[in-house]
Image (cartoon, rainbow, N blue to C red; front, side):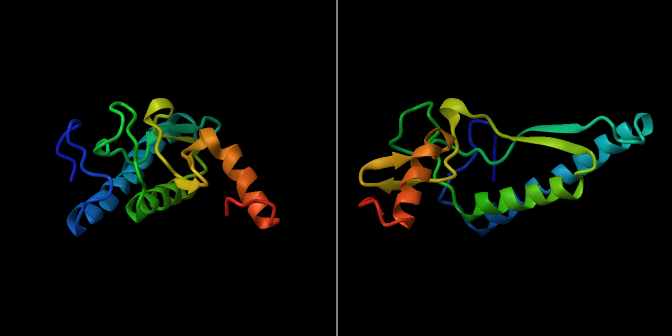
Length: 146
């Protein structure tokens, strides 16, 4: 469980208690959205103004042996479940939630696709074009990096 901003917990070494605590914590966004929507509905019953959700998602301690400040994170099913549950909440409230931005990018990039293709280490959106090119070449049988 997250103890403080300085102790967010490990990205891969966690037990059942931390797993289920995290899933429960992510679902609390629904209460926040409901409360904000109620306030907005009083002034904007036709829902012409959208609710924007910024900086959602998981954020764990830096991995040992990585460059300090880069926050390298290997994702697990826990992170996937947080994303799925949170996106489901946003979908249920799509009449009001018009945009939801995943947490900070840049040097604190969370790795949604982490693979090694022939020595090329892919991480995050920065290398999405390269991953897509290699994936397409693999499908067509045109790459040795598969």
